Image (cartoon, one colour):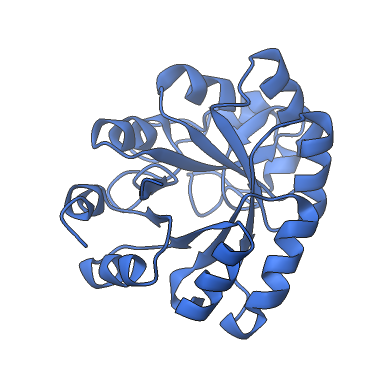
Length: 230
């Protein structure tokens, strides 16, 4: 299988994270996949925001869940960018998307969109909660799912068991917490493994040495360097 380079929230090392500007640059620099975070606004819109609050990434304040889409639209998410809804992202870029969902309530909303726009082959669903993956897979048969974790390497066996129980095809882990044994254990179970955040050449070499199937990165340079790294 091809080693995938995943644009983390677009290319958040050089552009405002989770904005159309960041996603478009990720696509231009050749990222294979764009990873983004989804939350529900007060009125039920799927918006691309990582934190529960907007304070860090915009000029506003408050919880995403307490703000309507119209209120979120008024915020500056960096360099004049606004907080995008998922459908905007789908229309702006053509590359596959890895959508991270932490809230179970967002799962049926995302599932409805995937079904309505026939996105099963283009959108995979990631979460650190097995319940989100199980519910999405129930609503969208055939959807690809990713179990995300920051568990210590010592818990790799447990992570593999959790991923298999949830029906996930991939596990995504902080690369600093991975070992060759853990990766081999996951591969033996038929799971793919990606590491994050692979933001330096040394970490890219480590990702290759560990036999990872892909790496999430904040920087476009990792994509161009990756094709020459064995």
